[in-house]
Amino acid sequence: MSKVIRVVTLTIDDQEVTGREDETILTVARQHDIDIPTLCFLEGLSGWGSCRICLVAVEGVPKLLPACMTYCSEGMVVHTENEQIKAYRKSILELLFSERNHICSVCVSNGACELQALAQKCGMDHVSLPYRFPSYEVDSSHNLFRNDHNRCVLCTRCIRVCDEIEGAHVWDLADRGINAHVISDLNAPWGDSETCTNCGKCVQVCPTGALVQKGTAVAEMHKRRAFLPYLNAMRGNHG
Amino acid sequence: MSDTATKIKVATIWIDGCSGCHMSFLDIDERILELAPHIDMVYGPLVDLKEIPEGLDLVIVEGAVANDADLHHVLELRKKSKFMIALGDCAVSGNVPSMRNPIGQKDCFERAYFENADTGQQIPTNGVPALLKNAIPVHQAVKVDLFIQGCPPPADAIFFVLSELVAGRVPDPTKVTRFGA
Ligand code: SF4
Ligand code: SF4
Ligand code: SF4
Image (cartoon, rainbow over all chains, first blue to last red; front, side, top):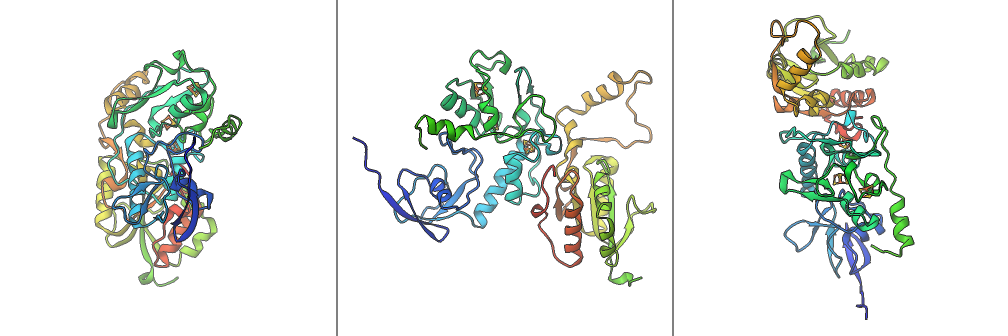
């Protein structure tokens, strides 16, 4: 027997809204046209909760909570923006920009990048931390696609889409902390992957210029994500 | 001529950038006439003056801080000015000049002055300022008061920011420009 799912009433930014108790704050907010910025979240993939861009304040809870991973409950009072949240979002973006090498002016995703758009939206006008200037490989071994680690934000969308939607599970995260990076197969060049089906789903969901189509020049990489809700609907997946 | 006492004294400098930001500044075209009564350009690539004058109200920096001379200039400009703007991605983030940083100076020199030089292979040291280890954004050398992103920032963004400043307001440039714009 399936469990009974209750409908709950909560308040988001002074607006009284209803949602199901198995829905997250993010889902319910978006259903009511309340904007909460996200980066690792992508509708149609499982929640991950790593980027922390969607942090919100819930009254009575001492710390900020990720809206994409926090379920609604009766009487919850949520604030999607205040000075602390704005400062946290800026700091997260500064960390992301300082961690790798983001040179937007020469990037294939310039003008169509979720990280860049978030920086503008959140008013991140400069990175106050010292840049790391790490040295990262560009994997151009695949005959259709390229992986430029310099622009990766470790959102794991590529890992999730390849595993959950394509069923190939080419990608994984290797190492920990600041050394974490995505790898294909067991850390083989992408072009040598025995599991990749060349479907391109990872490229299309990648929020930045990390996974891109070969042959694109500056600002030419525009991602197409329409396949994701479509495939989920056709397969009867929800959430 | 309006009274120079009511004008703000402005200096601009072009360090490790391509001059595109200065070009974009000139691209505000005839709108420069709206700014002219309020500003006095006293130093920069557009002015023929060797020494940086004292008592600057506003300094606009294009380019990353990449060598000894750049560093010397921004330190001096900062000391002599009240308000400093980092104009464009090179000044704000390091941008293209900072692409050498992950490679390292030794390998860059090797490539530029040995592998790609047919004759006279040597690292130039005479009459050129020494490169810093990394090309860095201006705010990592001196305090910066306002950041205008873009490569180059659109002329409209520059005009907006400057007209707000001369009107006595400090605008938020992210409303009109972004990295890579
Ligand atoms: S991935 Fe996005 S933020 Fe990074 S360099 Fe490219 S456009 Fe800029
Ligand atoms: S192209 Fe398809 S199969 Fe290959 S890694 Fe990307 S999502 Fe997986
Ligand atoms: S490659 Fe792209 S999709 Fe994969 S983790 Fe990095 S930014 Fe995310």
